[in-house]
Length: 158
Image (cartoon, rainbow, N blue to C red; front, side, top):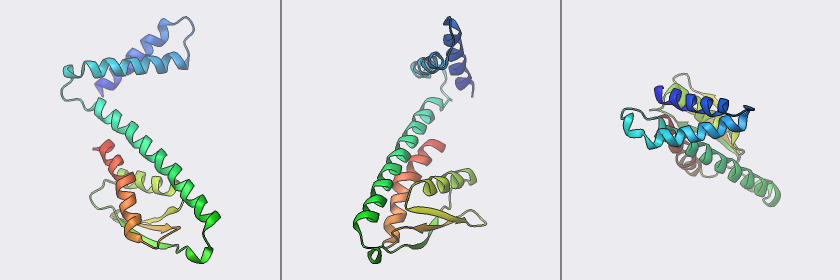
């Protein structure tokens, strides 16, 4: 937290050194502060600010990539596959080992990617009930969620 506040202080200092403070100056200052914090990471040995921030960027990148890929797959299926060849259905996804916040975030990410929707989070939070546009191979759907969403999420949150 202290490292983030230091980064924020550098950004604010940079912003107010300009004659007309604005959002671009703040963002530039924040980026410059992040680089300075990264260069001085030896001064904050217990801080995980830099790796977690980079993991957050990785998570956003992975989600964006999955979002675009899912849109393309869904559009291709809607345009080029016959309706009787599409096997939509329900499947369960195991979320044991995840915290409540991680389950909630993962369920929202699943819902935001076209083709799969979170229908229900179990009472204990250890399972998600999903509806998949193409559930012909439920294990592939689970593997894709694990590899493309869950792993980047865990790299950021842990």
